[in-house]
Image (cartoon, rainbow, N blue to C red; front, side, top):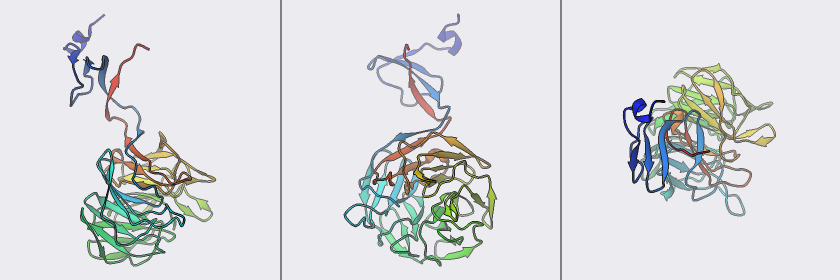
Length: 324
């Protein structure tokens, strides 16, 4: 039988701590923990629990990636379930409260990065207000043409964004100064999972008569086109990633709150491992790909502070070998 050295060309390393940048296939013995370990690639995607939000709330919205995200607004807490005027930043392990937006609201749209976010629409009550985040402060800018809540969002930063639906089929594009109405969704709905950028977006699921939807539409910068449906009908879930590589998760299906996760590969949806807990009206990172997804807050029922971080298939992970 061939030895490990004959196969790999090297001995198993003996180290006092795990290497800082192991490569796939590398094996070592950790003398501090007395464990044999190796570096491998994940075969399926999964969620792992991260640091909890400071304030539990639903209808919270987010931007950024899973190691540098922003959570803003929402609703919950106190005897009147009041609207929240809170901003929190995530560094990959914990949330820190920073400067508040100018308007308390929930169920709005948000997109961008941790240092450049656009926040628009929402319930305060129904509003068209838009605010721009520069990494330190929120500034009120020109409003949407159509006030609404429960809308979807896509975009790169606070200069380029798309406002999608929300109990209407209206779509508006933001150029850094003004909103302009562009071509409508094919199916008017609220509570969609949305993802992508201003000229290449995706909207999936949502609520429209007669109920929860599986419909998925893709935006090419000019028109919306219906494509393959979600596997499960759901509304008030969240989305993250791109129009060619996105993730839709959580929300409310017919009769129950769910933890479902589905991955979009540019042509079809596939079911993935569930969130750590069922919840609806949760927030998410906007991300640059499905692998950068973050899920936070929401209602279970009962308001949640839970943060989940997504690691997609093919990611590098350290495994510990056992004798069982």
